[in-house]
Image (cartoon, rainbow, N blue to C red):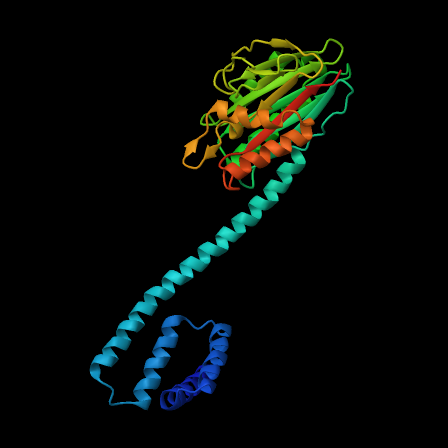
Length: 336
């Protein structure tokens, strides 16, 4: 209470000094007393009330209209103070949520971390960038004891923490499957049952799973409603869609998936992607799939990892460095 009286007295003295002289010293004094207000958590309406009291004591003959205007300002500041407190509370909650999401994103990175395999027959490039802190895309590599390479790429229809939790479940479900069940169609059929039993019906997962056999040079693959990739033929120097059909994961527990195969020759390139690539938004419209392929075509002559990074930079620039969707791109080149 004493502090408030001292502040009121000091405030009245500073106000009188400024009104009479408009000097900088008085303004400096006001800045200093403001620090006291902040330290003691004085609300805006309390400061206005202090100002009214000081004016009334200094100039008791003030026009009644001016006094009414000050009372109007006081009522305004009361409403402002309440709104400001609510705003500060929401900012603190938002900051807390951002902090928690940042921790969750770091945990997701750890849980979904995968190692790109190194084999003589295949050169692999990969890039995966979330549009926000949490990634709704997923990619994973599995190296079998027989030398085969499993490659998974998936996209959750849904974003944020629920999508991240789904991806963690998918990853650990895959790691639990015995190697004899690692054929693409078996993988998707088993994962489909896991998703159907454990994921909210409003969420679905698209997935493309491929298995490369270095002995035969064949790529076996199946798709669960995932964005079709591209095959680049080194001889004809032409691209073609990698066609594969299959229901998205989680709709029907009895779904089966057809397995396809491609014979890869030296220099052939397989491009696997999510719809953050083919449904990129350039300006106010989505680019066409053929436009996305034109961008990929510009960099396909580069080593796979360099090509993946350059393609991403091109799409990032196209979107003014503000991704609208998660972006994942995997490039596989047959070396021998």
